Amino acid sequence: MSPVMARSDSPSVAKPLRVIVMGTPDFAVHTLQAVHAAGHEIVAVYSRAPAPAGRGMALRPSPVHKAAEALGLTVLTPSTLRSPEEAETFAAFKADVAVVVAYGMILPKAILDAPRLACLNLHASLLPRWRGAAPIQRAIMSGDRETGIAVMKMAEGLDTGPVGMVETVAIGPDMTAGQLHDELAVRGAQLMVKALAALAQDRLVFTGQPDEGVLYAKKIGNEDSRIDWVQPAAQVHDLIRGLSPFPGAYALFDFGKGPERVKILQSVCVDGAGEAGALLDVQLTVACGHGAVRLSTLQRAGSKPMPAADFLRGMPLGPPQRFL
Image (cartoon, rainbow, N blue to C red; front, side):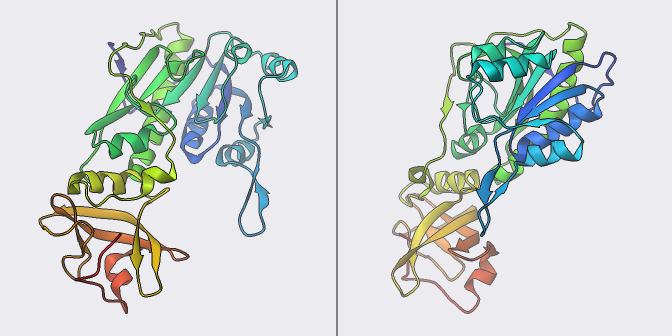
């Protein structure tokens, strides 16, 4: 693949496009706002329907829904796109392009074929590595040293379409999924604006993904989140930062009333040796299969995340106690 490398500056729009933006979480808000600020005509915004949230379980619109309403844009929240009626509604907007960012629903062929030019998807990886639902988390959990953001022309397969633009982003040794998410959201918005400018001028060239190097970033499940202290310290550290802040890697610890779940949100690799899971000192240094990690941010059930010093205040922990 010979991708076009993006610059950080956003090009001015010589030819505004009629755009449908489709997205749901915070990650997509940056792109919605950037496309709007670039001067394109956003004819509609599609987002997932409001979901129950909070103590009262009141219906809460998605971040993209709220951002679109703040911009005075038309918002649609269909439960499916597979009906003929929804296909007709979508086509009636006569969009030049659909911009899709973490929308959360599969687009059927009738929707993919409706825009005049293309459906463009913003995907947070260096395709074809980490296709699928959780590319940011999986890249860090696997110890990758770089990832990226790609603008892809959508096809019916899962993240299989040809790539028009891509930007590489380094993953620091202690970078968390939350930090990488925020950086990719900003860079992705800039890249999509640049891609739309190129598309409007018939200069956006797509290159098919190679068959080699395909990896799938499956959705994070509970079985992925429990720390296995038998693993080397580097892998434990990568799991912790790859799942921080959400859903959070966890281990069990007995504070005196039986084992309870504790989320570990930040750590550092340090020298140390001992039985896997054992506390090696009073600073929350935990032995791993090889080496050790020092826990720096933790969260007990029902509490807020807190630094290790605050976590230990009034509750000193140390050998021979251990995490399970």
